[in-house]
Image (cartoon, helix red, strand yellow):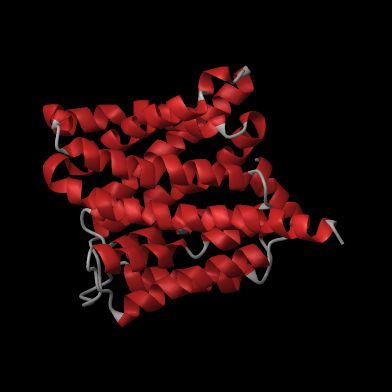
Length: 295
């Protein structure tokens, strides 16, 4: 009897962490968009990651981690994927509504889930994802079409997100929560040249510091630390299923904070991609789920 409450608590704990992380990162994205007119998406990504790296270094003290050559390689790939994901996602937000950008970005981890399974039913999930993409990506003169370049940036962020999941789980298993700090440091070093070239001395504007601090905490320090804890405490299937609702968080955050009203077709597209992602992860074979977690 006494084991049941502990088992329930251990199950609900990482789920709660992921929900908080999703709400936090989408709220931070809404706040970050207010910095675009001053330093652009490139500068915003750079400032966010630098501030987050400082915060997480002070809190998690990653210098205590003993890295082998193999684990260092994993951390570097994880960090570069993290930096690329943030950079390309912010680039997409310049012209694409938040909810749609998140939905397009989510095709990355969806592809990982489908590839890991490769069962007949996956054609259903692929079909739903394609329907969602066709409803979102402009073809012809659709009134609900979005900027094609912005859509490509979001899809590129999705590819980086897939690498983030694969290598984040592996790096987290090797080095624990300190991996989140190491990854953000690598991400900041990777993205900083783009931001410095684009924004220059504007990155040092004093009035931006409080906003950058808020964005860094909401979008990086808090959610990635929580996700790293959750990644090591649940199967890939459960993680993927829960993360599937992130496009809905993005759409609601864009509506509440940025007043981005989506059309019915766009809401249907987001729902289609969410359904495809949930279905793909729920029907994933157990051995495939382990491959996603360890590759």
